[in-house]
Length: 206
Image 1 (tube, rainbow, N blue to C red):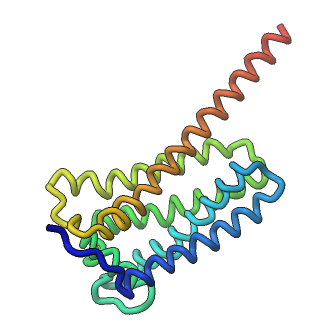
Image 2 (cartoon, rainbow, N blue to C red):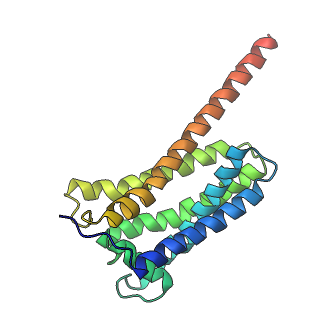
């Protein structure tokens, strides 16, 4: 049988902090997207949240992992990662693959998210190029975080607890699969539409 489900104070704090970052990200994104379509406003909300997670949460994880490890660290964000470490112990002891991916995620994905926010707000021509690159990076990060672990039987993953499996591992990581996938589809549709418009315009001028 699996472990009983219980929402302790550490789990409650972690979920509260993630909710606070989500609220701030949504507020920033919706403000930046004033006057735009509902879809674009929510894309901006996601990107603001995405960048906050990369810089605040994952940036702190990288720092803690470089100067020591999460398991021996103290503080509010260390407590959050200790809680997540109950689901995936690699995050507690500075697993080199995870830390390497997180360094790339913080630096590259975080900066790309900021560039994409700027490109959307200023309506830059390179918006969808950046969007595609960011989404591919996010999906690659998820793949390299979990697929090598699955190949060796997932010894570091705790799937016996409902909270750890469905909230920590599936839901929180699944967001960075589902939403980048939807944004890739949005870019595909938009680029296809532009190509059709350019082809139609070219035919008219023949």
